[in-house]
Image 1 (cartoon, rainbow, N blue to C red):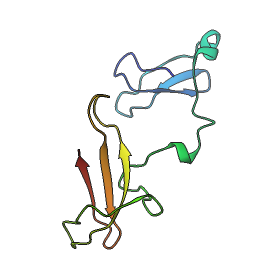
Image 2 (image 1 turned 120 degrees about the vertical axis):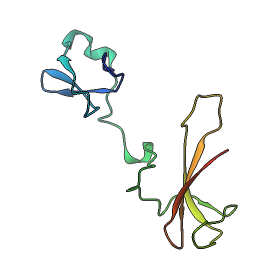
Image 3 (image 1 turned 90 degrees about the vertical axis):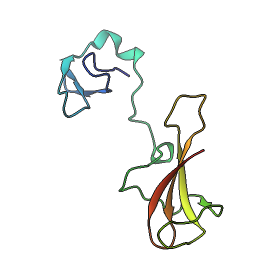
Image 4 (image 1 turned 90 degrees about the horizontal axis):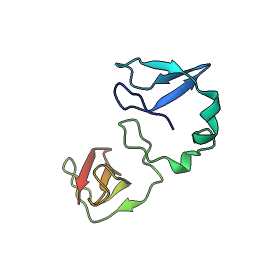
Length: 109
């Protein structure tokens, strides 16, 4: 994996160049083919390895929490995903989607 020298975002291969994934940065550099064996790509990564926390994330089929209450409709059940959003010595963040009304929220443990 290669990171942008300008902003620190991950770079991706685009032909013979490495391009910053941060749209506002736009930095690019020549691709160093001699170092390619040092990099790990995500081409073999499956959807099972990815934790979605965006607004478009499909929570249906994820684990359900019954120890929460939806602030919108009062339902006591929600799908959830877990993501480490702080340093490793901090607890992970749980992202919820209400099984009844679809309201989304997060909980910091």
